[in-house]
Amino acid sequence: MQVVCGKCRKACVLPDDRLIPGKAVVFECPSCRTRLTFTPKAAPAPAPKPGDKPAEPASDGEVRKGISVPFFQVRPTPDSIRELILSTLKDLPPMPQVMLKARELLSNPRANFDRLAKIIETDQAIATKVLRYANSAYYGLSAKVGSVQHAAVVLGHRTLGEILTVASASDLLDRPLEGYGLEAGTLWSHSLAVASAAKSIATIKAPALADDAFTAGLIHDAGKLVLEKHVRKQKWAFTKQLERTQHMWLDVEKLILGFDHAEIAGDVCEKWQIPEALGVAVRHHHLPSESGGSRLAAFVHMADAIAMRNGMGTGVDAQRYRIDEPVTQSLALTTEHINRITHEFMEFVIKTTQHQEDA
Image (cartoon, rainbow, N blue to C red; front, top):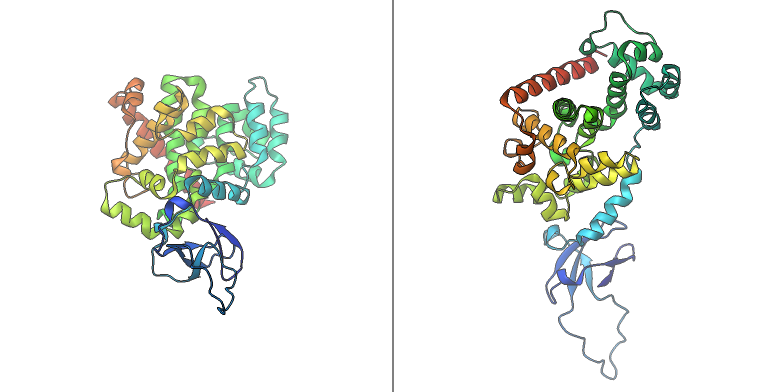
């Protein structure tokens, strides 16, 4: 049904299946953001009688300003919300091109150190961060390195690639997300933990996938960056649903928005031109059994669960993280494995974030 905003006069489309004739509902004009009350007509208006004053043109229903009905009673369809959200991806900072170009070069074990250094140095901000991380206590160099080329020679391609990925994502992920109730640094620490844990799991189960597991783990929650403002607008609805039910936050995202942050993260990966295998892992990191057999998705999922259950979570329900049992059982990680993985990611997070504070 089409209605017209009384303020900006722009046409708005409301889904018919959400409207009840004669019952007032509230929605927000997508153009001017004015909150409007809309009452669908209960019956056709009677034909005008002779002498009646001509009626003014009207929309399909009555639209007026009002705040009496909760916004979530009338929501656009999930498809229309997703379309709106995807249209805002252009506002999300792109993953630095230097990382994408360097990753392509790093996939070649015979890559030239000079060429790699030149690619990284085309972005001085990234190059500076790479050197800071390379000289941090975590990587334990006996002497400071003063150039990206020197760092590449001393650390090797794989370690330099890891540092480059962290440097490229730090500004993007190290920010507060009010809608999710996360202070600055919370998402960043969680992302570092999952990246490290996913790499450790891959090192045990499929060493060739260790680098990709690290990257997928680092960006697995990027969808929250996109959804944050939409969640913030309806924060009270999210809070009420979490209070009244035993749903996980992921379930409430689907209930209110029609999809979750993992699905949107998959779309973000496409925008950033992240390799498809990593995008699949990110999109299905909460339910890897639906990924078509992606081992990376399984690694990130298990890493996410281990991080959550060891206090490196990102929400009120971190301790109730729902595990995809068939997939995690197939990994067959022992208690010894999990203890080692936990120790490794704790050390990585502490030293990486401490380095940022010192810098």
